Amino acid sequence: MRQKILIGIGLIAAGLLLRNIWLMLTNLPDEAFQGAIFRIIFFHVPAAFTAFLCFFASLISGIAYLRTQNLKWDAFSVSVTEVGLAFGAANLITGMIWARIIWGIWWTWDWRLTSMLLCWLLYAGYLVLRRAVEEPTERARLSAVMSILSFAVVPFVFFSIKWFRTQHPQPVLYGQGKMDTGYRAMLYGNWVPLLLFAIILIAVRMEQERRQRELDALRREIHAF
Amino acid sequence: MNDAAARNFEYLAYGLSAVWLVLLLYVLTLVGREGKIRAQIESLKRMVEDREKR
Image 1 (cartoon, chains in turn brown, red):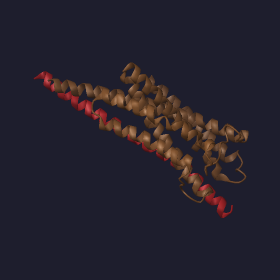
Image 2 (image 1 turned 60 degrees about the vertical axis):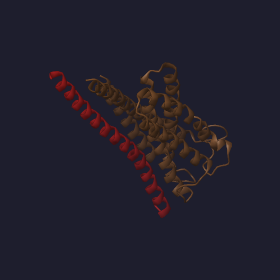
Image 3 (image 1 turned 180 degrees about the vertical axis):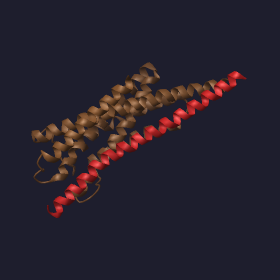
């Protein structure tokens, strides 16, 4: 049943995505100054939103684990963090490809780019930390603390383009920024299938964590003989 | 289409491919991990059964 629901979500996401790609290539006009490459924003920004949402979920589950000591929260935390990292990587790479055309360079150490890279590395560090600690409850406790501390960078990444003068474009979705309604609708519309894919990946990863616990229990049983 | 516009589209294609490549790599990681966990569970279950028989 659970598998059927996930397949259903996957089919809806794929359908929406194909529709969006078709519309963004055939219906939406090129941006006046940037040309066709502007369309990368329809993946770049939703990927960042998805990553931030996953990191926020990791923060909440970290707090929930420390309050309840329930390992299910730890499983949820590692699942959302991994998926968030995948979408964070997609965000960084698409940004670099866009920058190569618009700025003529792949990378610059500007506030937004540097803070996003730092954020990504912090959450990658969370996964490295998990590998280093063998004992499950100790691992869960340290990981929860790490995910709570790592989230401190996320608001900084989000607002860095507002707080500092950056090479990265200024905000267009909030504050003084403006975006054509057709572009805006596509941006949010394309976030939906990416979110649905994220939900599927999180569900699959959580199931793996459940199996991993089963495996750990079997190992303990064998050592008890 | 002039050279700049063609290059623009070429990089757009790289960008869209990059998104799916990253997600595909993650999915492949999940599939690999799933296979490893299943194999380990099976082998441990057999080990437990063997010990119980003895």
